[in-house]
Image (cartoon, rainbow over all chains, first blue to last red; front, side, top):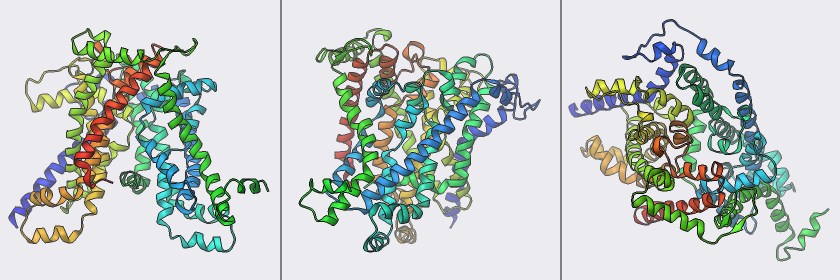
Length: 275
Length: 317
């Protein structure tokens, strides 16, 4: 019995230390975002903002393009969430429920694409977008992200987990598979739809690699890219507004995390046990 | 009904099956077209491009293997001690290997510890679990921007280091040639270990309770149970995490772009391979050379992965 309490104490101590390490950057940033830059760069660090100021956030919103970055990101997120839900659900439903020659070959070809890294395709993608005159346009990002292999895979797994009888019964009544999709599969897929939206929206909010390649003028930037742009010009002057920007940037993540933790974690787990 | 014409293409199927075939294809065609265009077509295009001399505007000229020879030469010259500004590809490869060697072992072990604590039955640990998972969903650029402040000379990290190791000094991590890669590694470990912890937690939950219970009755302590029962059980997941972690670390771009800057930092000290490919394609306007480097790096990346999978991936489908 004694060794057991001993181990429990060790677990708690190590767990608490790691808890500090994993939360400290967030806590410290929140505190610092209300400080003057002068106070924020003190050593040893101050913990209570004095004076307590909101000007870091105000300064951020005074950057002319800041609201545009937020709006661009929202457009991007909403657009790819919507397209991913429809295209991904359609494909996932077809791969899971219908039976036709070539289905598994095509699905495996899609899965293989997960192994193809972005750094190989980024130059051709740039050239294709350039050909269609879509560079420096948020539409290009939306087209590139309109459906992902991940979404198709998640949708297929979901429909595979439903009993086939639902679809077969409707089939015997003479409904076409496309009608069954709209009338039966779609209404049953609510958890899946939430998971896809959460994933795609957060993906858009956190996107950096593609935006850096596609978008050139600052007024078209998305959030992370814009914040980095603002940072690269303000570093030596004052850093606290950038910290305020990181806090605003983590808000959607925090919100989604609190509301939809189950779906976020489920998505990661699904991706591990593919096939 | 235009459908009737398509029936003729697949004569061996019954009418009902034909309909299913057509409907199935109608449903997947938008996704498949888009994904194949941006995946397989782009890949083939990149392969073709790697044999071109081109600057997006000029007429493309086929130059055979010249781009590949140039890339291998760059690696060779780097090995024989050419100056840093001549061989960004080599410097990037070296940096990224060091970075991966730091990140992957630490992040995997840390993720195992996090998962073990989060799924232990000691009271109070479930509160910690939520905190461990937050960084994994936060944008890497935002994490990098927070940490740039922590890594500054009068920043939090130097303060803590001096508390732990008196006389550590006050280095400027991000602007130091030798400390920028460790700084990036720390940011990456902090940011991604939680993603792998989630995988391990899920794997640990699938271990049958009675197996653990039996070993407990047999008198095995928590550490013994972890090494002899939990670890073998989740080995496929650990192998998967190591592979995914390695592939991800080798491709690092955003941390370097934000922390070292798009120029690759002081004397390319923060350069990575993908950043070099990006610079070659979009700053030096040499897409052919960029594509050749991308092809070489793709092969370099997957050969060790395949060997590792052959050796340890027995339980992995």
